[in-house]
Length: 179
Image (cartoon, rainbow, N blue to C red; front, side, top):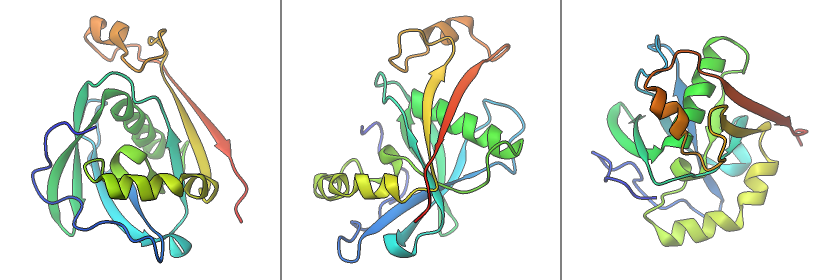
């Protein structure tokens, strides 16, 4: 997934393999008032063995339709394109965090936490995905909008409606034991 290039250098350097590093996303819900408000996040790098608790999101990348999320690193704000399906997942997580139905924590989503424009980083991180998922506090399986009956993440039925009234989402959490 590439989309447009970020407006600043989002991935300053390749993640280390020794010691293993991962990037984690933190969703801000402080300025959120409506579902379609921009999603604001921070992206931090951690040595895997010292990373704070996080949850992984598992989702279908879906069609190559993109939405922007705002990413802040060291006080600098830029944007990144993510698939519409991941965008909807992040919206739902933001809402669940705000409503206290999900704990505020870091999130690992492959499309954001791995530099998709760096083949060497992608190959290295793919090797460790099993460990990244098993190291998570929980794994959230995003099943998509209820209106997405095709299962491809396109939510075309939702788009045809043109609004968020009566929006119905499905989110399933699978709790994994901590080590």
